[in-house]
Image (cartoon, rainbow, N blue to C red):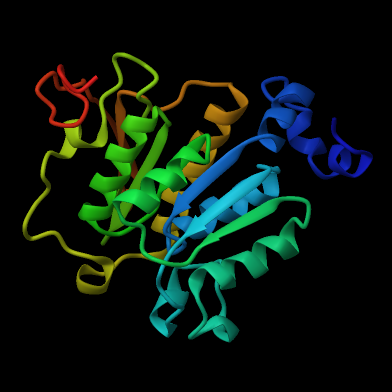
Length: 251
């Protein structure tokens, strides 16, 4: 059950008929893995902790750098040189001491990633490289765990949900294949801070919808964000029968 303090803390979202007490209890009993506690992972972690998701697993092997602070709002100047996971855990514990935080401070390889995914109900891809995204996608498909994937670079962002529990849902590989050899990172191409905040906030919203069971998640849809013109566009994405991850023969 929810304590009196929890009822007060989460009262504004409990007032929503789509959430109510039942939905809040689902959030309390949920476990989530956030892969990457940087520009995208910052708002994701902050909002999920504030919303009362009971257990947050934070995965990041990097340390806080001065160049991170323009957009990675969970960290501050005092965190420079500190593990991003440790910095984030301190901030989240201060925001909501009632939730459980689990640290993954080392890079996740095939075995540790599979184990980390198996321990949670939902995964958020907030990393900044294609190889990790592919590995996370494959692990989520095998474990039948929903994946909320976001990305942002320069002045463009995108967001989608891949839910292998649904037969018609595509996976990340259906959409992006083997990626591009000239893939750029934010350190090479740049990014505007509020854009990663926007994409991360939308990732958190999609996660809450999936965990509490309300609304229409972005399954089979890709949301494209043009920050320069403040425009949003949506594309339909179908499952690829020949996909090497989720296609026929890989069920």
